[in-house]
Image 1: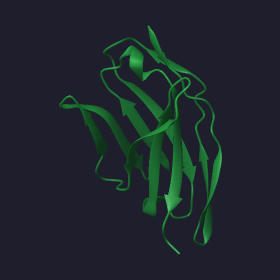
Image 2: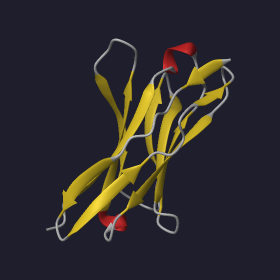
Image 3: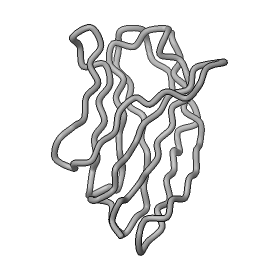
Image 4: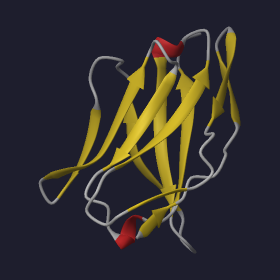
Length: 122
């Protein structure tokens, strides 16, 4: 098994008239190599549909790495590696969440995954 770890991460961002609270409740996740895994991020915001959700990963002893960002609640954002949709991010307006999916999991995917929300509305 190759564990993917996600630690609770709280972040507050000023977003125009409101404040966004970003929360990852899953403390640790694991899956088998070559499988997929979902990491969820709840965003409490009055402007969720206009929020941009950014996803990052930090591998041991390395700098934070930007993976993908998602704006739309109707279209997933994808980051391809070797012609495969390795990373996908989606927003669910009904649940006020964003989900990062890591496909074709490998040992190299182990790290701490973070989400962050930003609204450019003023």
